[in-house]
Image (cartoon, rainbow, N blue to C red; front, side, top):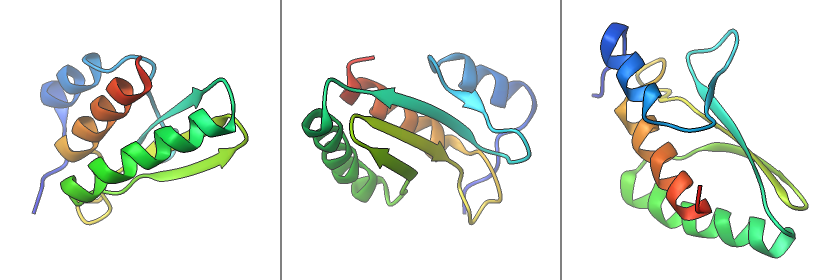
Length: 97
């Protein structure tokens, strides 16, 4: 089982991410990705899905046209873990952020 990030370890992990914010009222992080069109947004989601399967860690996300809203939290750990940080970093790389 993975452990929740706390204290300095949490702050150091979050500092490595660009544009991600902590979710108020939850131990989670979120980011909104905006693409040129639906095709680009869906392509991003498809590429992320392949990575998420390999990590066995799946995002909460919502897509409307060219916008993908993502929330990451490790449910079996009850909050933010290194799994979330890894998936957030992969999403940023896939999006070209």
